[in-house]
Image 1 (tube, helix red, strand yellow):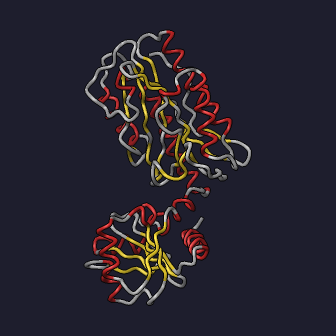
Image 2: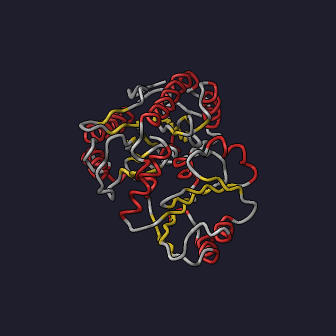
Image 3: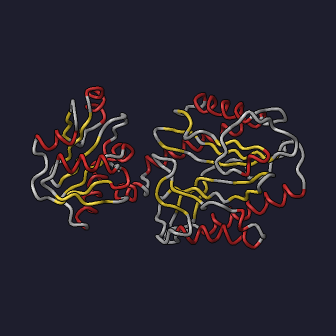
Length: 357
């Protein structure tokens, strides 16, 4: 989908809400609508023209990347510049991204441009961006392929005496050596009892025999984020290891089987949660089942009990149930999956067999 088509879809949504424009300040959404990858920029979308604002650091970059907007290089405050140059007609109804602007910044916006009606807008761009085009899907597939390859390459390093920080650092190195921009996010490496922390940060703890090691990591490629979790056993697996692992795997496979276009996020969450509930560990599944991925690692849609909206074709989501036992450890298994008309296809190829290393 071209940037012009993306903006056209935004305008269609604005028309439904009787708005004459929207001011985009979230940099991820700016990138989605214009291709701009810098650290400072905003976009004003109006019926007949789109304006892009940035500062002097990005003169050449904006010329190269932004083709669907009039470019403004602003030396000071964007809001004052818009007002001083009368870029918005009086009495228009203009949306703003209420989730991505602070109270103080919104006050400054209203003080500077006070001759229009500002209307809160939530998730307009995010919901459009959730449906991936083929170029986006290819970027995600490449990020996921790199993630799979790095998992294969890191397996020999997963042994007694290795530390969580060591493994995290090696994963980051391997991502770049395999063609990624870097990490999609800071890797989660939780061994032993630390694996019971769903978002454990790597520590100096050494791997010990009998540890579950939860590894949640992903490559960043062309701005798109992979997000995979695998859990392995160090040394020797007990019956308890096998029990917990197999419950989580059955739960994850149930979610994959359930997911398809027309099914809600809540229904996928329930499919996963039912398996864990019936096994007696329902209170140990302490987070939602998944989320969308794309230019951000956590984005629309949520795969949780509160999302009653139907999934659409070409959503790319994670399905990642887990069980976390305080003082002992945890298991999470996560794939990035594309939603099809009648099915859900996991894009990760890394084995989900319980590895004992």
